[in-house]
Length: 426
Ligand code: AMP
Ligand code: GLY
Image 1 (cartoon, rainbow, N blue to C red):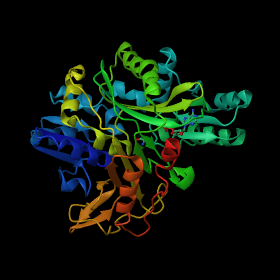
Image 2 (image 1 turned 90 degrees about the vertical axis):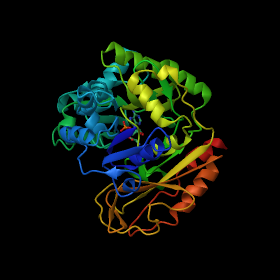
Image 3 (image 1 turned 120 degrees about the vertical axis):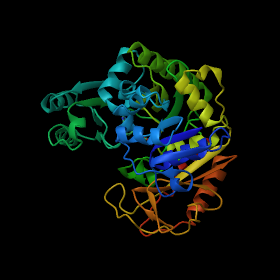
Image 4 (image 1 turned 180 degrees about the vertical axis):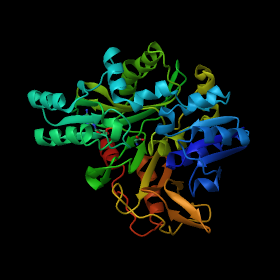
């Protein structure tokens, strides 16, 4: 098989490395890819949102299967477009991808089908939202832009003034563009957060091993929200009992709800969960593999990834066992100085070998490019240094000691990835 991977981040690098483990996969190509991906897959400069360009590339290169990894092209209907051309693709249709691309859609879905989530109201004008927040008088309150906002569309307001500013900046100043035409105002929940990715073909659902993201930029969960500064798997808060509750009250009800709405979800469905005192509740859905959750989940997958994604596309997921190892995995992100704010690009990364790797861990490239045989920074999150071991402390030790071998000017990483998980294990 020859596979085209659409995307350019650490998640895509992890997916490519995993696909290549199977003898059934002859080669993977990637568009647009990055410096590290180029060591595993030939890269082509086609933009992720260029649907016609991707179809032309897939046809020229005679690929057998396409994997659409990022949210934007899924929401724009890239999988529908490939299927219309008779090319098999992994990922949800545009209608199914609304589960991530519209918070109003996903919240209304959960309400209609009794799937546990934070109580909420939807508003399409700022004054009604502000009046509602003032009269409810409960803080903190959570304000979410309806559409995609690069993971930044959620604001937790501690008091009325902050809430009013948030509503105005989203709905009047349009800081997230049209994504802020509607907003969701919701109840603030508390409890440990768990990410669960699951394969689903629209009927059957196979959950992957759970994980824990670290979204804030700085140690101790301080600083701004980022795309994710590191992950560990499994997530120790997610016990077998909780997993069963989630399967019965959240996962299968969601799969069935999407069918009832006429848009069965095929692909990777990501459940962002909070384990509240009232039981597990959905914080958000994503219509795709998470980044950097993928980097810790896939190394633990024992069933060949290519077999699973084909079964999803063919709607035969019930015919295979999706098996995960009991080992642990940790990923530490090395980011550019300034991220998630503005940062420089094009800085040379030292310490990587000619394949962009180091001994003792797997280096998934996120924001890098290759230039004259050198790896340069080319994004906010630059590298995801990942290690697998029998226990979480060993995996963290391996990942962190490998990060010591890598250096570039201004680089920063959190030094406490996995700390909460280790505390929970005590
Ligand atoms: P999201 O982009 O929906 O994942 O939200 C980003 C982060 O905001 C989540 O990972 C949570 O930590 C937090 N968050 C979102 N919704 C709520 C809520 N209703 N209550 C408390 N925290 C929330
Ligand atoms: N790490 C969270 C996400 O992929 O949205």
